[in-house]
Image 1 (cartoon, helix red, strand yellow):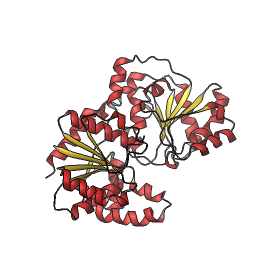
Image 2 (cartoon, one colour):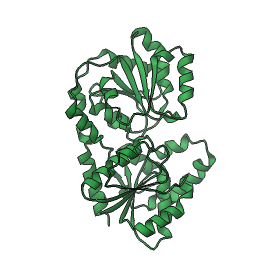
Image 3 (cartoon, rainbow, N blue to C red):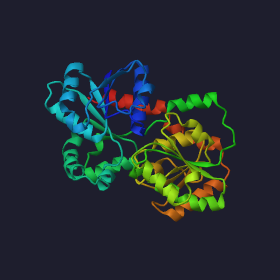
Image 4 (spheres, one colour):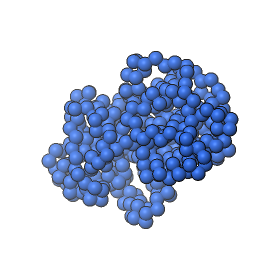
Length: 363
């Protein structure tokens, strides 16, 4: 199987991490794999890519400028199939295929909830023009891969995607977690901090986590908040922590490629996202035996979190319920093994088998 995996970058995000995980697994199965990126700027995941994977940098600043580079790559390399991360790149590849004499299959791994992305989009260009192009071209890919049922429903309801064009395949647990668990004993002891992991961008809404700290410190005087990630809101979030008088209790740790120890030591992981696809943060946390408290946002968390078993769902954007569920989690003694058991169904082997079957059998 000659497969090209196309993505805009290998920056420190969940989609980029999943791209690398899948590419490495496919190449270990004997597949001929190219990972094609528009740009290698801030490419933190590059070092994790298997050396047998060919990395091709198109050196393009934006998807809308990528047509000729993508067209030339397809013309020269002739992949049998393309697995593309991002709906805008998928649209571009459909246009490339229209103008190409070479026939190839397009499998689009949907990233995020498109209706929510549109709702929160301030740019007129993205909100209307890109949305129009998505509605016209996106359904012309061979298959759209949704990470959860909620994402699939969103595509059917808001974008009129045919049900038979969509395949649900969950994100896999990072295989390096299994290696970490083999090499490290997980003790019952935890350190006294709450963990947040993700890009410091509006959609992650980390302001909720910081705003909880003044209340939590009154009840749990030693508790800290650790935030792993980088992004455009770092300065703004630091200013919020200073304004609330909790800056000395909030640790901005930056991006960590392998944050396993952070999860293991945390009392809990907190997810305050306004919307999600299928959050790797939750998968990583439960795979390492740490409970998760998350807003019941559209759509992924409710398909992973089992209340009282591996964490708690919180009423959407309800600060009072958020504080209550954090307190429930901090006051309870959690069994690591029981939490880890809830992650087994998301094993890499199960996920890769689903991809292999899909890509091999679409005619």
